[in-house]
Amino acid sequence: MLVAERFSAFSFVDRITTLEPGSSAVGRYTIPVHLQRFPMCLVAEAIGQLAAWVSISHLGFRRRPVAGLAGETLFFGSVTPGQVLDLAVELGTCDEDAVAYGGSARVDGGLVLELRHCVGPMLAMEEFDAPEAVRGDFETLCGPGAPAARIRALPQPEVTVIERVPGRSLVATLQVPESAPFFGDHFPRRPVFPGTLLLDRQIELAVQVAREAAHAGPDATLAPASVTDVKMRSFIAPGQAVELRVELQPQDATTFTAALAARVGGKKVATARVAVATQTGS
Image 1 (cartoon, rainbow, N blue to C red):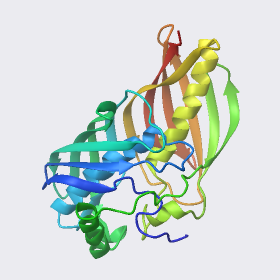
Image 2: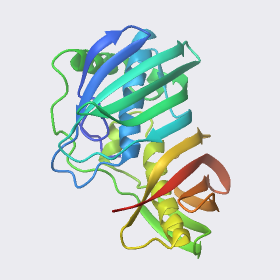
Image 3: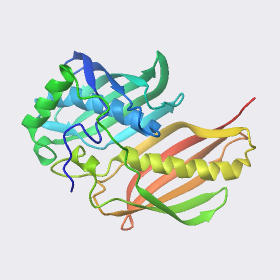
């Protein structure tokens, strides 16, 4: 594993500007202008990371949330490099076992993404990172903030399509790298492939299948409208090959729902449903 500087590869909160211990927080993240794109799944990751900081600090840096469930993610737009994400989270419950939360991200006052009914299991911090180092990171975020534009590039896991029924289904393989800078943030002591990166690639595949089913014209665009029932069932480790499956279910002329599943060694490790909407430009 390549050990990166802290905050340098997969950390999407620059500062925590308001904190109600164990209850809520407001923060921000400036998307580095040099990036080619910033997936909406990483906007969701930023909200989840802010919620994690609230829960981690509330429990004295002994526990941290890892993976879990997301009941509903609503997409209201897209973001571009250089924009500032204004993040807000509210915790429902937070104890030694789990944290329940919701949150939102805005750009220039406009809502771009909302998370609802999320639950993160709390695990021992020392299994994933050094508690005192994490405490220092938290103090940095609540004080001067993390260095701007510190992330030089986003990971692009290799995906190979191995089976396709046009407009209906798709099977692909995602190869998790053996080593990568983002494992230095996620996590130093036990590297785990981020569920939001997995979901981003799954959504891309679902949009491909929906485009085939929609017979979209040249002015039509397809984009995710919502993701529901996200369940991360087990960790994905460096070097593993992940089988991705997309099964499309047309709902009407402009909206499609796809069932998403990921398996490692035949074992299901993640599931979700994504709604893809068609919009026709004027």
